[in-house]
Image (cartoon, rainbow, N blue to C red; front, side):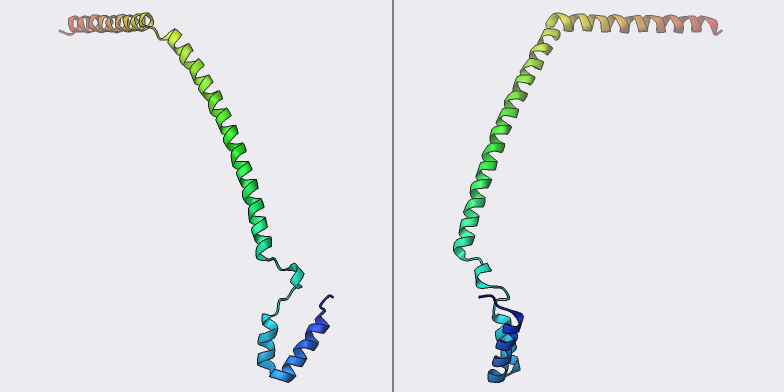
Length: 124
């Protein structure tokens, strides 16, 4: 049976006559504004919470599996990069780079000293 506004008003009027306006207003404020079939029970809430937890656990497990896969892929990429770097950065490579750097430094100092000596001879 659906509760209508007219029916609610009739009930209010009855209580107002029987108990007075203030008590009738308080009682009507305590009555649910919707049908009782629309009110959730503790069992309804428990069921919904259980469903949400199950869904959340599934989502977390899926995310965890995806993350593990991504981490494994990243590790493989890093391992490949490390192998490539080892090919280039060997003891011979470092010795050759250091030797070239020293030669360039000595050449710079030689040119600088030549310019300094030349300038010293030009200035009386």
